[in-house]
Image 1: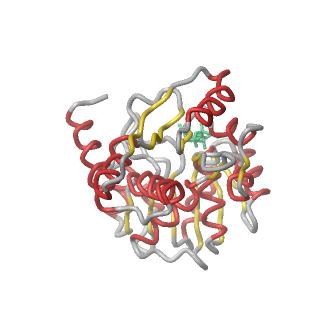
Image 2: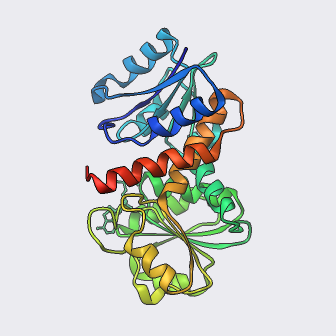
Length: 275
Ligand code: ATR
């Protein structure tokens, strides 16, 4: 039996176990996906221990993504190195570190037939999620503008992303006038029914994707739909980062529908039985 898992703290509400175990069941793979919550100082020991125990693969989440990228035990690929964060470790041979958040965002857009190449994209948020999404969109050929509450973080990120511009949040309405794509990569909308973007700035020529998935229908997506925009909820990015990790680990095409059904089933159950 192969063991896969998630390193993070906390991980008790993670949606990755049901999503990955649905894939194993569908493809008849003898594997389990378990969660681990090491102490923040024990990350290196946890990675070395996982390797020694024969664990096949680990996802990495908050607060370990950046430290995993610095780990002396992990050979980090180019994408993860540029983003500065690892969310997937493959233990086949020398442990290798990858970042599937960028590719996951692109696949979420592709699933909805949203063209990225040549698109004018506005990413709101310059934290870990914003970084991965901005790099992914730029690699996909989009013209990227990053806007963030703390404008200096947007400038720093834009300096690293080819061709990108960095702005404060006040620039968002103007940036959206000519934009094709808006991605919310902040946590705004998770705790309260608020949106990071004024409803008046949204329009029918936009595709709007939210990284927030609790709730699935955020205020941003509700107002985007009302403006005639195409909307893509946060479960799609979560799904496709997992699909990409599964495919890296197993070399097999992921059973996307089964993974999506498991993920959305758990989200629905959580929303009727709040965390
Ligand atoms: P993650 O890894 O999930 O991106 P993070 O690195 O803590 O988490 O980044 C959180 C993002 O949400 C940041 O872009 C943050 O803006 P700041 O850099 O100014 O902190 C943004 N964010 C969080 N709360 C916000 C709020 N109330 N209004 C606007 N942006 C907010």
